[in-house]
Length: 152
Image (cartoon, rainbow, N blue to C red; front, side, top):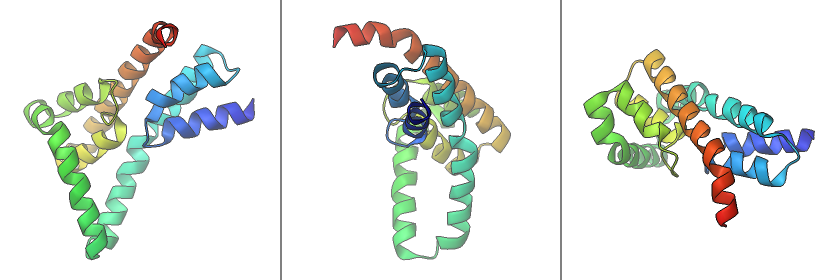
């Protein structure tokens, strides 16, 4: 059971699908109940913004002079700006929440965190917006997954 919890948590925390992948994994490949899968995935995904935001700040403060880091940071910033730009620039924190709540790949908390950082959205507002967006997206996945799993 600890292995199931740990794998569901780690998959839900990873930038490769976040809880959008962790929830289906937890439902299909573990003995955890639906509520446990939801709570584990949600807690992992809610940790993304505060931890990743601090990582971005640290790396930008210490490594921005490095050529390889600057190139990677610019690439990720441009990608986040292109994906979130219209919604976030127009609606601010509400746009950030809307972007994160869309349960599709690459619309989650990691790209939302990068967008909040590059668009300089207030930390507390961004935290709230991203967390609400994550909660809505994961609620949608929990509700829709049983239907989708019968189709595949």
